[in-house]
Amino acid sequence: MPKTKTIGLVLVAILATAAVGNFVYAQSSGASKVPDYIIVAEKARDQARELVGLAASKGVNATRAYALIEKGSAVLEEAKSHMANNETARAVAKTHLAMEYFTNAIRAVDHTFVQEIRKDETIKGLMNLITRLESRIQTIRDGIAQSNVSQTVKDEVNTHLDEAHRHLNLAKTALTQVQPDIKTAAKEIRSANNEIQQAIKTYREALGERPAAANLREKHGRDNVRGLDYRVDMKELDSLLKNVHKDSKGIRERHD
Image (cartoon, rainbow, N blue to C red; front, side):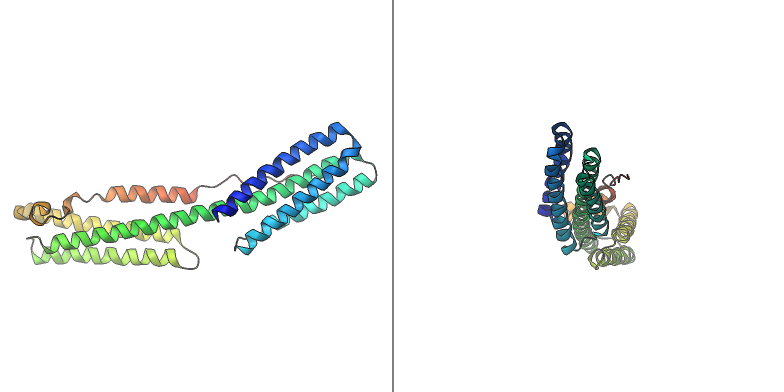
């Protein structure tokens, strides 16, 4: 997909340059050059069809792009009619408009590819975050199991951790379904994080009554449960969500 995205961007640049360059060329060189400009437009149409067809074969919704190509093709036929009637200025204007439609068709699928790539990267980041939180849950479980707090406290902490793990499983389900649901996954991750916070809070409160269990690192060589910073993970979650909400500027259509 990244390779296809790159192809799209390259074609957009080529066609945009051709549209402007040939428009100026046709105007400055007289009627004899207009047929060449039309040929360039036809090649642009063919390239647009090829790329949009490729996008569609990859599962991209190319309805809008196909519509733009059809509009451009219709306008290009008008340009040919004007050319046949020796209406050079009109032929050039219509050809230029057709080129814009073809270029916008490519931009439309390229935009979709960019969004899909961004979404894939976000899903991967969320899955990595889930894995890290699962590891954090296990770290807390191990630390609590070897601490000197009461069994009642241990049970309460593990209840919160069980609930956190349940939320993470729901997040994974949301991300691995046919149509990944990032919004739901993010909600479940936040809920899991809240349960982890509660587990740590319960443990910290117990430590206030049981100083002997205060330093798990010294006693057991494990991470200090009190030092686990959940805020870092939520900052990362916010960053991932900002990434998926980014959007390119929409395609502006011209109407003659």
